[in-house]
Length: 112
Length: 121
Image (cartoon, rainbow over all chains, first blue to last red; front, side, top):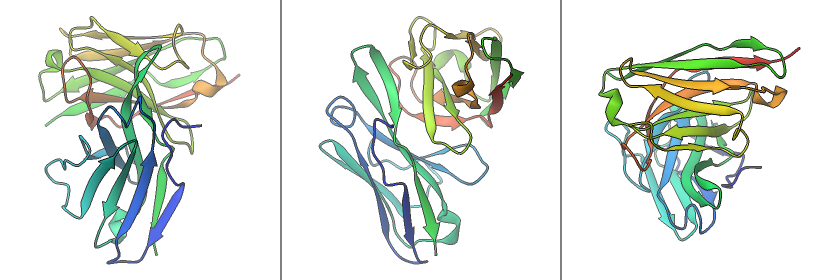
């Protein structure tokens, strides 16, 4: 059971806009940045969004992130076939046993 | 360019030990925090451990605390993960990842390709 909650799957057709949600608590999303990682099939994860809504260089502006309270979301507009991947949200968590990084369970995005 | 190359994975019996290494290049290794993250077959990502740029602070997931030790050798640009008392549930691909910050921990801006650890009798 993951600390951050994501829907296990999402889908859309080319050109559509899809959003993926990520729900946490006051000890993680509520008090720290949210990050998003994309994992294409058979490859290592790659940074997609950092500090809630910042895109690293090379990431298309079709990808955007937002955060409100203890929830966050990733939006992908102008969906393309190459966006088919697993998406993970993450955040630092201020647990009683010490700082830790927590992930969502991942959302498998299918482009129909 | 930044490169992270993991090694040391393999098959080990339950209760056994293994040491993973991550050779870093393309950046000033001694200036950045580093992480280990794992992914069980067909499952999601699980953070394992973090070490500060100078090795002075280390954080662990509860699932590995007391069994795994993260360390680094800045003179060799290498990150390590010593894994003891291994269990079947430790079976996973282990990734090393570079942190964007040096001490407090931020996001993983680069990842290695991973090394597979299989715990089985």
